[in-house]
Amino acid sequence: MKDANCIFCKIANGEIPSQTLYEDETFRVILDLGPATKGHALILPKEHHANLYELPETTAGEVMKLAKKMASMMTERLGCEGFNLVQNNGDLAGQTVFHFHMHLIPRYRADGQKIGWKPQEVSQAELEAVKDQICQE
Ligand code: 5GP
Ligand code: ZN
Image (cartoon, rainbow, N blue to C red; front, side, top):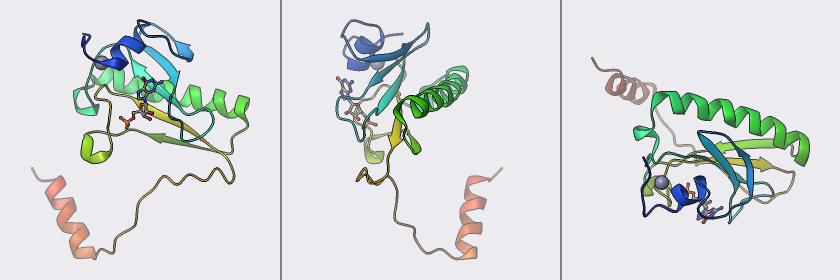
């Protein structure tokens, strides 16, 4: 399924040109136009799925396999010293293009980027309550 109004559908299926690092029947891996670091890339499924919730399980598994392959190859070629996988779902979580994608972000010493969060204080009781909420029957 493709979405006629989706830019990543057009890029993934070759209707809009991109710097492509890898392509097969299911995916295209492209360089991000607004890179966090040198080599920042995106794994795009060719089919339109808005986010992780809508992604078929098989595709989800294949995404992680491809991420591993790309991270290894890019680390060797770019000489980066670390690597972040980032995947945003929903505008509250930072998603701006509503076609599932996985960010591949090579990390370099002193690259000036920070991908993270501010850890909060939590009690054991609060942790248990959250666990019970998630794991309820
Ligand atoms: P999100 O914020 O949805 O997780 O990530 C969207 C990413 O897509 C951003 O990093 C942004 O720079 C990138 N992006 C947006 N439009 C285009 C485009 O037309 N071409 C490419 N190559 N990247 C894009
Ligand atoms: Zn799409």
